[in-house]
Length: 550
Image (cartoon, rainbow, N blue to C red; front, side, top):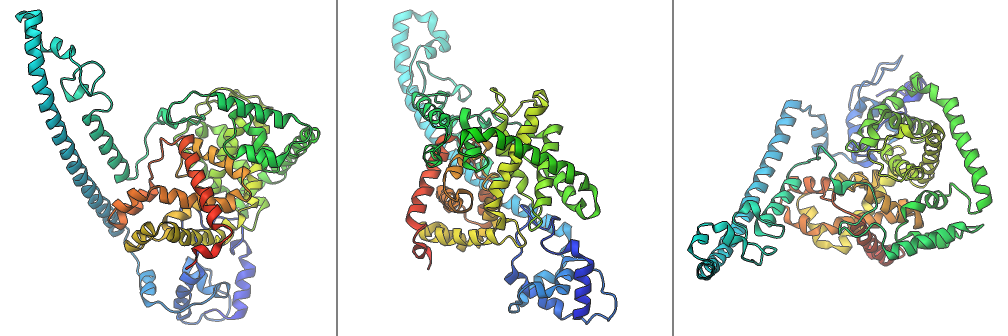
């Protein structure tokens, strides 16, 4: 191991590479660094032959980097098994072959279960068809007496004239004509659910139900009488010379109408003052300040010590909501690059971390709605005036910054905020639904393996964007919504799938389910139920932490 003099030289020479710099170290695709778990690897580094004095050797791997900078982490007890696993070099072909076998085995199990369910449904259908056939014979005899023998040669006419408990005034002849609600359709829906859960699958096109407009899955009208009344309350509250922010939070908790969401989000996030007369001057000053940052810092993106940050941002931007055409437009991606790079430069303690790119999208969409009336997912932003685009960009930057100010420990070195929240989630679930908790333990599913993404991305990878926007209405209205209330939302979200979780009987099945939960068709109704359950959990546990500590 290097002597003290060498370590000091290393830290001095590589100041841009140490933890806390703005370059990418970890993110949404990687678990956070755990000092206790990785301390054993440092001891393995301690057993290496001592380095020769003189110029320190440049670290070429992360383990070498750890061994050189072992004073940055606490050293724990040895774990021979972990050391052996960490020291083993796995062949990529072996890894891929094993992964494919796991997925194939799980798919076979799901296929067998689907066949069993389909067989049972077909048996029920045959029994039903036999009963219907007996009724048909009697009806046909009556029909012969009434319309004559010539008409009986056309069974279609006879069938069409009959009614059935499964049809709207007609009897279907084959499964291909089965209407909604028939056993055939039930089997199809069941099979579709299994297919959705069997493999990580992303549809090539956005289904109509995934549109970002405010809507309920029940197909209720866009503006009900109750919604119109709520909109009037918002407008009256916002029209006053000094907006009552406490009253605005109460009103916003149950959702904010699309027409007033932009101004409401800006007020609740603290971006705009409550005093109406000062708002315009504050907006102008903050927007000018943002574009001053662009002029001052953005050209440095190609500097050597900023290249890694900009490169990672440039890679992540096209991955942001890839199924929504709006975010694949070049002008939108350039806006996101500027927002994320400027934020990283101004926050060197964390810098850019994968997942932060997702947090820009709700603000961007909401503030685009300030200038358009139509749907936004296919909207061409180049049709907007340049001033409008500049306003949207600056407003999105400042509101995202306000959000991240409250949860920045989620993104600093080792991501301690996320680790604390995941541990709290585990303790909470163990109290509110012990069956789910024990089921996860039985199949060795660690909460960090799926809940890390829930905390890092604020459930944005688990819900459609329209649901995220509705969720953030409440987060903006709730005190410490993004940092504290989000924990209870995650707990309610996990328990929401208890039936599906308990049906899975292996580690692979549980992980595939938890990383691909079927929420594509969720709307405002489902999010409202989720938030209500989260509030109930918060009311029961937030002020009594000993209730969920064993």
